[in-house]
Amino acid sequence: MHLKFLNFLPFVALAIPAYAQGPVHAPSEAAKAFGARPALSNVSISPDGKSLAMIEPTAGRGSVVSVLKIGSDQDRKMVLLSTGYPDQLSYCGWSTNDRILCDVYMISSIFGEKTGQTRMLGVNADGSNVKMVSARQNDNALGIALGGGNIIDWMGESEDGTVLMDRYYIPEQTTGHITAQSRQGLGVDRVNSRTLARSMVEIPRGDAVGYISDGHGAVRIMVTRPTTSMGYGGHRYKYFYRKKGSREWLALSTQSVSGIVATGFEAQAVDSDLDVVYGTDTENGRAGIYRISLDGSMKKERVYDRADVDVTDLIRIGRQHRVVGVSWVTDRRHSAFFDPELEKFATALNKALPNAPLVSFVDASADEQKLVLYAGSDVDAGRYYLFDKATKQLGEIMAIQPSLDKYKLSPVKPVGFPASDGTTIPGYLTLPPGSDGRGLPAIVMPHGGPWARDEWGFDWLAQFFAHQGYAVFQPNFRGSTGFGSDWLGGSGFKSWQKSPVTDIGDLQQEWKSDLSPASLEAIFGDFSVAQSGSPARHADAFVAPVLMFHGDIDQNVSIAESRTMASRLRSKGKSVELVEFKNLDHQLRDSDVRAQMLDRADNFLRSALKLSPAQ
Image (tube, rainbow, N blue to C red; front, side, top):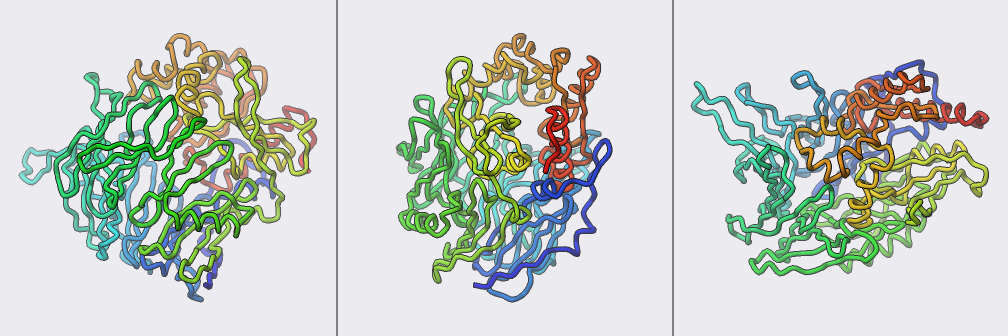
């Protein structure tokens, strides 16, 4: 197998530059290397296994979709370009052997407010016939659909480029328009990605929030979320199923949510051959994988669970996204396969790549004879590979972080420490290469989410600071996911009221469209007690200097929060600097900006801790 790659230098000039508040100095070589965006963010293979589509970065924040003919001496061809503002390429997949569908994310002003939107684009493998596949709205629509639709079925047996997409229907003004459509809510369309011909498969429902197909063109599961009498999102999700060949919806399960802790079966994937639906459920405070028969018997079986951690992730493969195993995290990620052939292959792969134990299936050809794989570790951001079952050849496609090839990275060690009540808090410790950890300045780096967790593997932030001489500790504090419902909810978020974490009043304003005051109290605990832990309300208690970075169109955390915090600190005469990055969101997808942030953070810490300059 012959794979040939070249850099996309001609498109560097098309990237939009980043701007940061305050003086900008040339970043260090280390900051540029560790802050560089991944060389590949998405790889997919055509149904016939002859071509790859890849999303690659340009300088700054831009990206391109390129196509590579496997086994050819031709250089890969750029077929779609994104400048990074306002549009960003999220992922791409193949609807046919020569047609690619790409999801585009953008943030634009709607009624004066910056709001995230998605749209689906189609492009031929030669760069021609670029069309918007998402449904277009006309001027009579009584609103704006923010989501452009998700592909829920690639219709593996179809060769005409037809897919199933969910779609949020917006009613239209009816006065003077006899053809106006009045339906509202989430439905499903069958869409031809070449001609854009579309037909309704599932009638939209106002309470529907999701649909799951069987991978063969049949929608088998519907999820609804009834609203409360006050118009807030409800605390229950209802799942319905269909028997094979039937259009009647039957009750499957009800999932109840108290705060952020869910109980009840949550459907994830349908196996058409076994006629079952896989999903998660909770028993004794731990989530596990279960399956329920869809033949009407409702037979429920436990597939996999553990007494120590939650098991919630399915391993899926192919254009039908068939379920082949489960995955979970203790101190490291582990997998168990239902498919004996894939279990044997995974074992062989671990032997072939002993230094890259984190392996996952990324994509597969229609016959699953060619597999796109990812393999990495704590000291390797990873590489994409192509495996050919027929020839048993494993070829490297590209390294994800080639900018770090000349740097020695630091092993990540699972550790734990006792909290004030004696509970062991798990986490990960990254030390500078060759260090025993003694006498080092230390950084505590909590994960985001906040309902998320850190796990063993490569982390560009932790690795940069370790390279600069710091010890980096990443705790999975109470409130992290994966450790059971008590860790997540009861002793998790509700225990945060004892320490400054958030301002419930501001949070309620940000989430007012979805969560009621009662819902927020269910998550964070008693309102008045939680408010007493607001950092902005205790600016006078800050002793250490503060440096904050924030993208000014962040859709996850409003820039207003950082501005409020900075204003309160300044009003109390505290040392604070807020660096705002223009036209960037939560992920700061800009290599130049990330390099600036890393250097400024390093210099800030060295000044505050009176450390010598970096070597």
